[in-house]
Structure formats: structure tokens, C-alpha cells
Length: 213
Ligand SMILES: [Fe+2]
Image: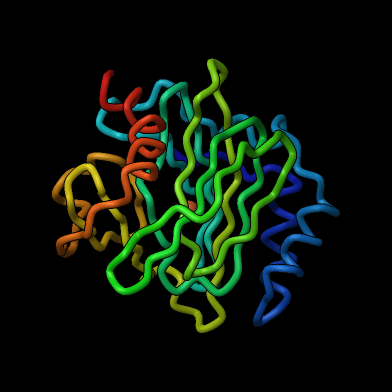
């Protein structure tokens, strides 16, 4: 589902197209200046999405340099733990409060390294090596604006790694990070060493509302 491009998003697209390469800090300044409000992008929201998906994912715009999505989160919606492929620069702007976890993956060991509740209006920087997950543990629905860019012009062919501790595996996808994703989203898979007990409990607490639906 795509809709007409709102004015502020059109300015964002035009500005991003003016420069050949971007840095995350430059994107963060641009977003601050644009001050996009929820009302600007509300018609891209996909709440009450199909049950098989763990969040609503709507592509607003994509070309070979960057992609813009609006993600919609009902109560209990969450991403799997995932990286961002070869993304060189990017950001997520939050229009509501969400749980957010950073992880590290080194020598086959996945570890939680930071635990936050992101407040409305905050923007989180993104690059390829970033491993994170997001979950809506609030009763109210939330949407988030995602921008991912690549400086080599291969943005449309990017892939992501999704970690599935509850299934004991990690998989490669075309960029989606749904929990319990369908086999047709998975390009390849391999085993994953178990998370520590504390990290696993924290993760399961965040994703159980989705699995209990
Ligand atoms: Fe992400």
C-alpha cells in the first residue's frame, strides 16, 4: 500500500537526491530541520495488519540510493533482532514510545548491550552493523519513520541478518525483520548460539505478546 507523498517527505526525498553520498549525522540534522509530524505521514499507517506479520511495513519511497518506510506498531508488535545489511547511513524517527534493545554479535555470541525506552520525538541513528530490535509494549499504537541509505547505489538489492533465539537460528532475508517469518522471506539459515539467560528472558518478555495472539 503506497499513497501520495506528503510535502515534508517530498522535501526529504528531493534533498537526499541532491547529494551523491550522505552521512548519518547529516540525515539527523535534516530530519531535525524538517520536523516531520505524525499528521504528515498518518495515511501511510498500517494498523490491524495481517496476523502473519509482526508489524505493519509500508514502503513510502525507494530508489537505488535510499529507502523510506513507515512502520506501524499495534500493542505486542515487535521486530526480530536484526542487522541492517550494507546500510551506510540511516535513522528511525519515533512518533510514540517503544522498547528498544541494542545487541552485539561477535564470535558467534549474541549479547544485549543496551536497553532503552525510546520517547516520542526521538530519532535513533542506523548503520549496517547496528543490531537491534524494537517492540511496542504500550496499549497505544505507535508509528516510526525509517530511512536507510547506501552510498554505492545498490540500495534495492540489500539484505539483512535476522537472529531468532527462540528458534536457535539466524537467517538471511531481503530486508524484512518479522518475528516468526514465512519461509519465503528466508534466503538462508544457520545455527545460533543461545543468548544468556537474562538476555533471553528480556527478549521473550518483549515478543511473547506477539506469539500469544
Ligand atoms: Fe532496524
